[in-house]
Amino acid sequence: MPVHPLLASRFSPLLFDPSWTVTEEDVEVLLDAARWAPSAGNSQPWAYFVARRDEPDHKRIVRHLARSSARWAPSASLLIVTIAHRYVEDTDWAYSDFADYDLGQSVAHLTLQAHAMDLACRQFRAFDLETLTTDLNPSPGWHIVSMIAVGRPAEDRPPSRDRRTTTDLRTAPWD
Ligand SMILES: Cc1cc2nc3c(=O)[nH]c(=O)nc-3n(C[C@H](O)[C@H](O)[C@H](O)COP(=O)(O)O)c2cc1C
Image (cartoon, rainbow, N blue to C red; front, side):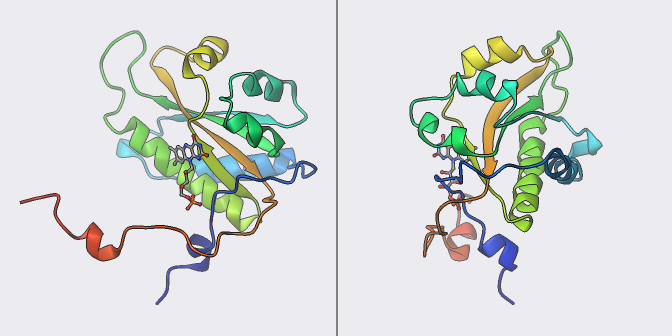
C-alpha cells in the first residue's frame, strides 16, 4: 500500500499566490487541527501567533524576517509564529521535556490540514529570533521556535523530493 496521497503530495512552496486570502474560518480549522495533536501527558505545550496578510500583526512579523524569507514569506496568505511552553513560569523546571517535540507534531497536523484544504505551508527559521522575541514578549517559560507561511502555492510540486530510504532509517546509529 503506498503512502497516503495527502502525505505523498505535500511540499513546501517558495512561491505563494499573493492575491489568495484565507478566511478567519480557515484559520480556525487550521488551529483546530493543531490542537488535536498528541502530546506528552496531554500537556499541549504550544501556542500560535497568527496574522493574515491584511492584518496589522502581519507587518509586525514581517519586520523580523531574514533577507532570505523576506523574499517569499510576505506573499503567503498567513504567517504563524510557533511557540513552545518549555519551562514552568519563572523557573528553570521543564514544563515538559517534550515541549518542542510536541509542538512539532502539532505543526505537522496543521500542515496536513492545510494541504487537505488546497493550501500549503513552508515552515522556516529564517527570522531574527531575538528581535521577534522582544516584540512579541511571550509569557515566562514560553519560547518562539519557528514560523509557518501558509497560502495557495504558486508553483508545482517538484517532480522529486530528496529523502533518506527506509533502509537507512533502520540502519544504526546504535550498537
Ligand atoms: C523546523 C524547520 C525549519 C525550516 N527552515 C527553513 C528556512 O529557514 N528557510 C526555508 O526556505 N525553508 C525552511 N524549512 C523548509 C525545509 O527546507 C523543507 O521542509 C525541506 O527542504 C523538505 O522539503 P518539503 O517540505 O517540500 O518536503 C524548514 C523546515 C522546518 C521543518
